[in-house]
Length: 451
Length: 172
View 1 (spheres, rainbow over the protein chains, first blue to last red):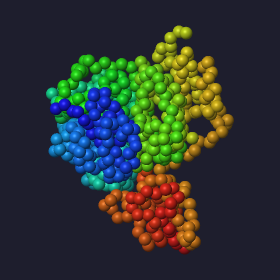
View 2 (cartoon, rainbow over the protein chains, first blue to last red):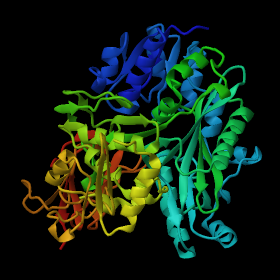
View 3 (cartoon, chains in turn cyan, yellow):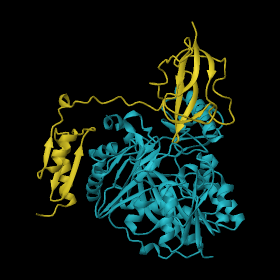
View 4 (cartoon, rainbow over the protein chains, first blue to last red):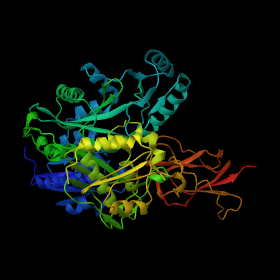
């Protein structure tokens, strides 16, 4: 069924991105908006807008019934969930299905399956994918001692229902087990209403590598290369690049192939991301999880392949066959993205909402800025602090880096405190310039980067 | 000007890495690369000067000359304002104020009981509530030990920096 009008069930930069992708395909877009977002850029660019509730996410963007109802009232035949909010809610996907609206994403069963990290991990293991040695479910803290005796320390405990780094604790020695488990289960219960924990070996020198996947209704599965998202603070990504630097060709191919195999076995449809951790010491890689939505960092994959992933999502959702084969995907050059947020790095990344009084964006060849911001735009206290993604593309990594440094120096924002000064410093660090970093590098070097 | 390739850049980086220098500002034609060790960053004026300079230059980090002392990195538990005892109209009471703009939460999640209720005995440093802004939770802590005399905000309301959230009657 051909899609004609898409309901944009999100906000911020990704809502703008979805509206533009719809227009590029000749489709109409209806933007959902909360009280606080009534004058947003997405609303202004869209062909229509639908008020979906109050400013708080749980009064608007998190209310599946409101979103589906608004989509129906505006005669939309499809709904794009973006990322965050309800993008990985099988309930929203199911509600769309029942209302006869195409959900632009995978099947509800796959969202459910991948949404539970324990289930996903068990399934990946069954399919023969490497998973980090550990225990699938901890009922009692004494079990961790047994595991520690068997596989050694350090260990990491995670919330099964987790996300965003909450409910994660590192155990370095036996005496830390009990207190860590108590803290992690309390955090997991508070954040997710589910205190189920699992434990695995903590990889000290690991890189976070994720593979972009596309699957269509005919069962064709392609990968759009990998991204390195190892620069993280509290498990939140700050910088992403594609392709991953410092990976051997053989290892790169094995990782890409594993992701394709997983997606094939679950008959994945639409865009998804398979995340791995690569142990730099042993050159082993392990499955972490699969994200069943478009990712914040998707532009780096787009820039190195020329594939518009948002457009691909929409076309796949309406039942089109993949317009290209794996062999036709040409990887060229290097892309780096930095996330610019309204936070004050100097005070522990305290969020800084406000009104943007000055907004000067770098421009030029190989530069892209995905944002909802402009002079006079309000950065609301109700939502996350992402203001813009600055993405550069150049023939080589070093050229991309030079471009990134120049672009960050030109980027000027007043009215809210941003992470631009912090990022300027980060991207000049020798380790980063060499591509020599792991998932813990940022936390370890943070104090040097802040003043 | 001869082309600069990635191998050349790698060689330059190796030289820099093995040197005693902390900061390298390299320019070749319209290509410019800045590299630093251990977070070193020139002051704004130096950076501008380097930007307009047509030649590459290295700077030695003389930490004695860097004016700003690096600030200690503080975690999201913000105490500064909330822990300052503020006297309101209630002369014998200590006011606990919101450190930031955000949504006040009286309990860790909707199913749980509030952290404190009126009349509760609390210790200095006890959690009284949370203020959430942009998905980041800041803990509101008791600045003194004592009794909760008054709770001035209800759950899930928007608070501004300096808004009084609680009055505590100090013990002893």
